[in-house]
Image (cartoon, rainbow, N blue to C red; front, side, top):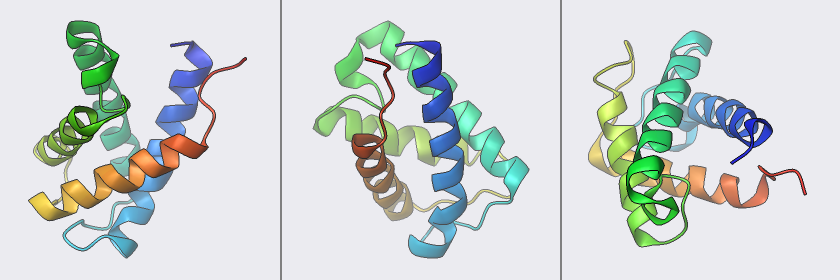
Length: 110
């Protein structure tokens, strides 16, 4: 993954997390700084998971395993970000929405 792709994913994740509270039940409204911190934690967890287990297990990987890992990462991020509260259903829905957004946002320069 290129640095540009990582930056685009980080910014998109922060923006999506800010919007999640308004459209996803079980997901708290996040302010700007909380969303940036949550996006940073999610990006770092995704990088570590991808480095350890490969692209298919990454929160940004395709498939069911990537989806579940993304939901787990989002759920556990709430314990590190003040003001972030996510139910299990909220984490699953947020992972789905972030996955959809990630499909349409180009993250690699070709």
